[in-house]
Image (cartoon, rainbow, N blue to C red; front, side, top):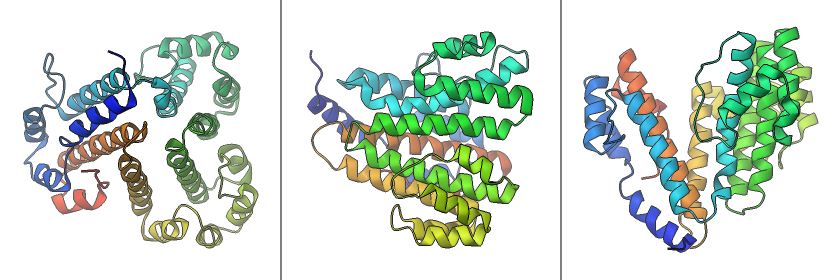
Length: 323
C-alpha cells in the first residue's frame, strides 16, 4: 500500500485518543512510589509488550523507540523528522568527543539520529571530522580543540549546540508547519543561553560563539544588553515583539523553572495549532511533539516520586499536555 499524508493523519488522529490528559496525569502523580507508577503505565500499554521493562525510565525509553518506529512507518516522507532527529545527533556528538578524550568507548548514546553513533565515535577517535555532514564537521573539530586544549566543556557544548540549531532551522525551512516551531525553539534556546551565561559569569565572547541567529532577534543588540547585566537584557527582551518575549522575561523574573515551563507551553500551543490542520504533515509533527511532552511529564513525575515531591509541586513543574 502506498503511504500518503491522508493515511498518516488518519492514523495519528486515532493515536491521539490514547494521549494522557491533564486529569489522567494528575491521577498518576498520586502514585505512592515509582514502582506503582511503572505498574500503572504498563496497564496503559506503555513499553514493549515482548520485553516489558521493570522501571519507569525503561518504559519511557521503550515507548520513545516505539514512537519513532511508528512515525517512520506511517509517514510517506521521513524528511519531515530530520530537524527533530538532529537533536539526538547534537547529544551524541558531545558524548563522542567527551568519551574519546576520556579514553572510553561506551556511553549514553541516543538512538534515532541521522548519523550513526559509531560514525561519530570513529570521527572523534581518528579526528577525521570531514567525514561528517557539513553542518557538524567544523563544529566537532572546534569543540574537540576546546575540550582537548582549552578544557572548556561549556563552550565546546555551545559550539555544537549552535551548529545543531542552525541545521534544524535550515531543515525546517522546507515546511511551513515546522518553520515556526523551530524558530521558536531556537529563540528560547538563545534566551536561556544568555540568562545562564549572565548567572555563571560567561562574557561576550562566549555569547558570540553560542548564539544562533533567528528572525526576531538582533544578536548584536542582545550581546550589548547582556554586557550591561541581567536587568538590561530582560528590558531588551521585553522590547521584543515576537515569540511572547515580554511574558518570557516576566517568567524568568519569577524563576528559571517558570521560563522553562513557559517556553515548553508555547511549543505545545504551536503543536495544537499544527494539529488542527486537516491536510499534510502538520498533524503528524504535532503528534510527535505531544507524545514527547507526555514522556517528559512522566519522567518528571518519576523523578518527583524518587525525591518525595508532593503532587502539587510536580503538577506545578510539569509541562502542558496536548490531550
